[in-house]
Image (cartoon, rainbow, N blue to C red; front, top):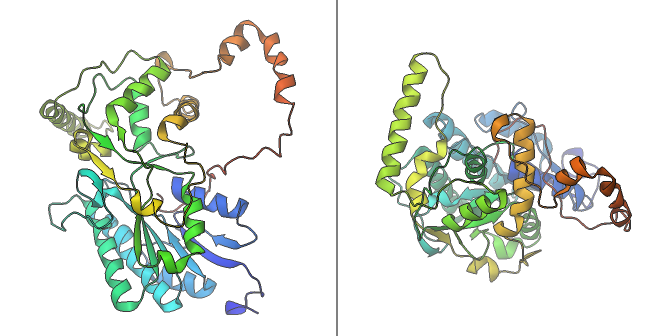
Length: 397
């Protein structure tokens, strides 16, 4: 028998926190699909294990005695200070303490929000820990600093993975990249809220599980290390916005760069308006990303040199945010239209193959496609694992 009465097996048991989010769901699906003979991943929901409850963590990990822990959980970026502190920092520290006691690796997901603006930023560059920092970056920075200290003083075996702007399908929250895509689809971005120079790094959600799998099997190389998991080349924000506009054949935004002072003034007016609406009983909420409005006008590109110099091999180096745009646009527009999040008068059908038009005007041609579509086996086609729709109710990334 193995740990705590587990049957003898070569499988390693892992606990994943945040299994219903974009990153956590993708990791869970990957290990169930591709690593099922090597790993078994447990993904408790927040009713079984809340990061805000130390006793939940203690009881669950003592009961299951895992071989590793993966934490992808975060709070929303506009959460209150207590929720942010307890989830992003104290939860991280308690998971790491458990990993030390069990003598197992701890894989932690962090964010580029802990870093300053600038070009080609290395892993050792962090913001200064000051009271003025917003709750989200402050909590994530505290977590990184705590893990570094626990590695040096307690021998914690951990790897810190920093993500930039994450892109991928199957994220059911409208945040980050999806927030920008939604604003374009909903035609609420009249001008370019950026400048000619602002560039940002992007992280491909589908590639993350491959990296997690690799670092679990190469602990000596990745122990105590932080890695930027980002595409090698940063992206001009204006170029990305205009490319999406072109794909969807939109009239807006106009190719006019709105100066930052004017954008900040407009955002301030919107904040005042939402407060007034709440006072008269109308539910209204500002997009939380507006707290990072200044980042839209400044470059933050993360160096991928350390990642590229490691033993990890990119499973598909040709995939970028631009190559994925057609799929992402089609996926999210279909989802938002089905949920009536986009007004009927403003519906946008992204159909690069023109099949919707053929379906309406020449349906017999649809059937003519059948021969080509059935010329190869369906189940044997090699596909990347898709992010899972996990029903776990947990704090997700």
